[in-house]
Amino acid sequence: MANTKSAKKAARKIEARTEINKSRRSRMRTFIRGVEEALAAGDQALAQAALQKAEPEIMRAAQKGVVPSNTASRKVSRLTQRVKKLSA
Image (cartoon, rainbow, N blue to C red; front, side, top):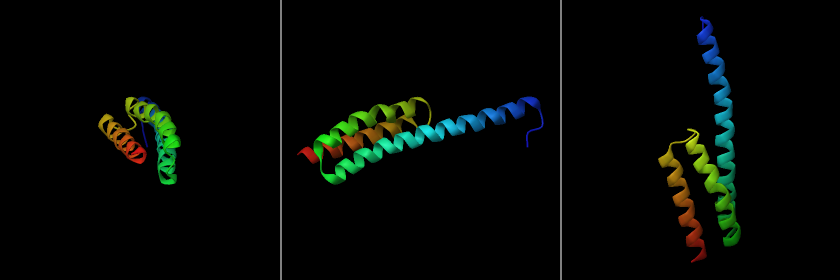
């Protein structure tokens, strides 16, 4: 356990930040799941709409440091490819 006052405060900040990051990561995964489910159903219009909602959430998670920016870009890219493939 932290001994100094500053270390105790740092521990509190880390705990709070961890909760926020968990929430952001969960929100991102929920939006990705929406796209995945639309793709599984084969509904191109629904998949496109879900992707348009998911992309900003994924990029926001990257911007906030929850996931690396390359990871976010890769996820968006792969989802976009799959949605386009569904329409073809």
